[in-house]
Image (cartoon, rainbow, N blue to C red):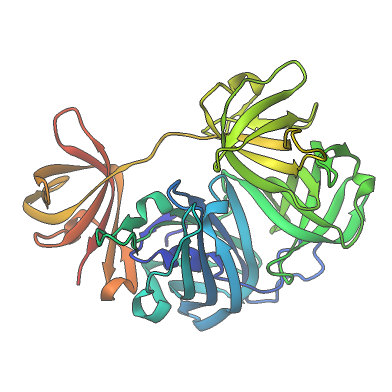
Length: 445
């Protein structure tokens, strides 16, 4: 069974998001108040993304998720969750935790609606959804839900590879998403968790533990433990104490996932009260002795970012912990914090930072065309608009087969490749003139 990483490549951006809300039920609270029923296991759905800088928002509604397999057809979510994929470049956001019957499942059926692409100037586009929004994600080997255990499902979306500009002269888009699905029975995601929620219960003020229920899915609640080096920040983005938290407070929690007694809890690096948000910009000056530096946001406005002494964390492009010396002029960054508007005209806008994440530069190139002879593992020719080029698959390259007009997708192998198949290859041009591909999306209709 595929309890290791399973990767899917999709043809509809919806698919990406859809997975995001696969399961919505009560759940996940490490408090142990609601242990799983006999014969059931827990599935936790986590969503992340590799976004594109070309759009300001990628929004869609997840309205239904169904598991299909040996235990039959299980409706695990019905409702409406609106998601912006571009909020999730650096985080893994829990969408839902829910109980389902134990067994081996082979399909995730999703229903998506209202895909919306928003450009930076505010123009919006609504590409049509394939198969009326129904997406079937197949895994012939199956993935197991075990009694009394939590299976985390991490959905990794790469919007840079998913959105294409259609050359019609009117700026419309075509969406053909690239999605990776990682089933983790006992494993944990590498990225930080970020949850916007409401404090439901203070479990232990001395230990710094509480129950958090998500704002977009109040039935999904998790236990949160404030790490020994964690910080609580008030509504103004300044350090405070755990005692400042109260039931019904709206907070943002950022931290690491951890297993505890078959449940999943969050070890919080930050607990931010109020409306903390994410802001993207470019470093304009390095941090000074006063702990501030300048950035330019996406609208070209210069703002001052204030590091909170003893609290603000800086993470490098690979998620490594670093410090303010890594913030060099010209670097792209994402700042998590609270924006303080000037009280007097002419004063600078202040952004009090809880966390700063430095952008990486690992975007793949894309080649689109039709497979041509010879097709000999691990290489084939690809006929493109610019001519033929040899494509060599790297070790561990991922192949996703797409059919039914983009409504069905499943993992594939080199043996599934045939001349005449429309294919997108992702990777880099190699020193020998061949394209080194780490991913293929192959249309098999």
